[in-house]
Image 1 (cartoon, rainbow, N blue to C red):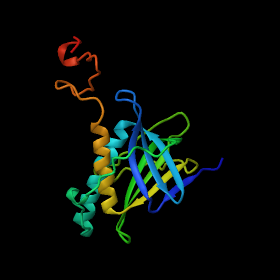
Image 2 (image 1 turned 90 degrees about the horizontal axis):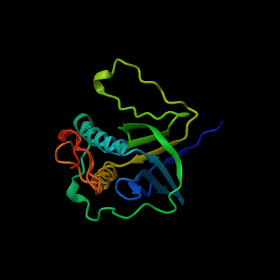
Image 3 (image 1 turned 180 degrees about the vertical axis):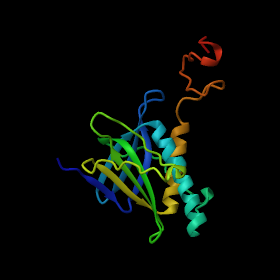
Length: 192
């Protein structure tokens, strides 16, 4: 079975976005460039973790290689446009990979399809450097994007806006509040 690698090096646009209403949203990563649009579905926690790890990667690139970090205020016109339509899911993301290319001073993001019947999120921790991470199956579809530090900062900022646009968190337990309230574990299951 052949696999596809959707490579955008660099894309015209790379964003995180959603389809649906808060509480029933589907999250997507979408890349556009060269007359193509590729959308891959993933979980909200994966978008959150991706934004967090990209910030850490930029900080580490600055610390180790002296890469100039873009400042949030330099983004004059943030990308708040909706996802390009039609939003056709190419695959559901199982594994996310990040790398920094020192030669070109770019960030590489790779979203790899979930394996048969399984979905996983691998977040490598520097403390676990002795453990050899399992390589994802080479027969899985991939979305590979190469971004400048400025484009990476724009992606992070939009991802944070998309994440915060959902349901507000409960002030007691942090779980999302439904319009009708929710059963808060901090209130011993009483409706809040």
